[in-house]
Length: 232
Image (cartoon, rainbow, N blue to C red; front, top):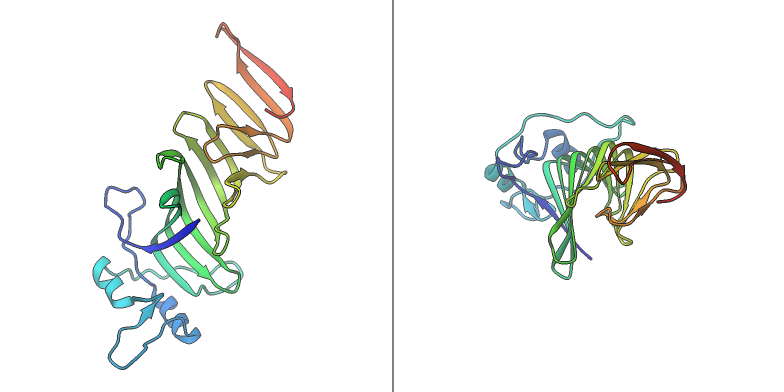
């Protein structure tokens, strides 16, 4: 799979386009100290990942807000608002991630993102599901992801999954949950809850490993039956 990292201005109609992308002042100072921000020759603009910082600011506007450091006090190597990442398979998008804010920590090889949305696509390039979460982490090499906080995966065909933490394995194209975190799945009026959830990103084939409870409609639709059992 190919991966493309983008710094871009999102359309005003996009729900995540609340602020224009910019590199914060603190990140610029940190990048200068660590050599991530460089001027290759006299008179040339400062470069960040090969993109002139001045062009980013001039094209999308400036943002003076300085984001706080993480709980550990570790400073990010790079910071950007309105971040987007696209993963493709032979030119067809597999998924696209959008985040209101993202910070790169090179020492840990991760990108920490806030207010995230991930659009998943089928083999024909059509959107098949959408994941939203309060925050997430992306491994820069594998592009594996972890989503936390009010995690919702909504399939286009109607199935809805919700939990507090979810993992996406990029190479395997699998969604999994930690064994101690409960997952809730709603489909056609039926509700399943359990632990050890695993599925494809489209929620077409999923299973629970343990403590499964199901509330399903009777065939007549007149009532609900409560079942407890194994994998679905």
